[in-house]
Image 1 (cartoon, rainbow over the protein chains, first blue to last red):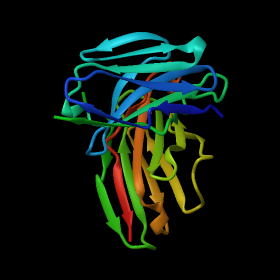
Image 2 (cartoon, each protein chain N blue to C red):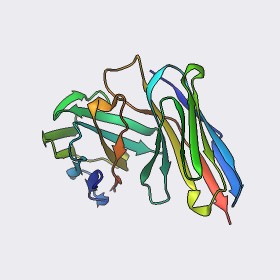
Image 3 (cartoon, rainbow over the protein chains, first blue to last red):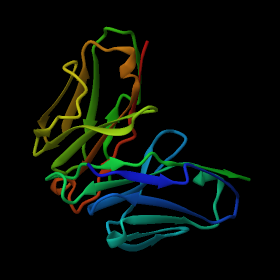
Image 4 (tube, each protein chain N blue to C red):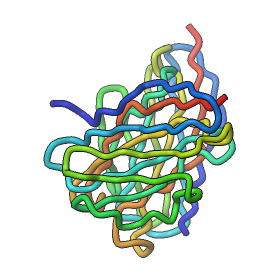
Length: 112
Length: 115
């Protein structure tokens, strides 16, 4: 099946800093999502982005499907951005439905 | 709009007991997924339903686990008998069109602890 790898595994920032999280996938995808798991364990949808670029406030994401990677940008980070960020993808040639394969996540800690 | 609703949020029970987790998908979504999150294995798909029919249950760990979807607005995941290694966070997600070309929306999860 498809492999999804995220980097870095851990990231520590000072409030106000910018950061870039990366997600590499081993095969073509027809679904790619970024999630934020907050300290309460909730999985929050950030972006549905199988290709292209999207922005939502201080967050933006870009997926270059032909190069098999996606990037999540966080600008002017805040302490509330802390948590684990997951990338998840559906292999285009894998199954007939949207079986999401998750990366191992990036643990982000933002200090005040 | 109501999102995916799971209950209970937390469950603590003793080994050997039956556990039932519940999920109400987003209205109008025809695809439902159960995932499990553990420290060792991360997030993994357990079972997928389309139009209330189980399509892929290859991720269900063993016969102690069963899932049903009696109608479009309700699904259960049952563990009988439960074991300490079943302790995990269980998520339910729903989407349109089998999740192809559509995002999956996750519930808040059920944190299960088996003593």
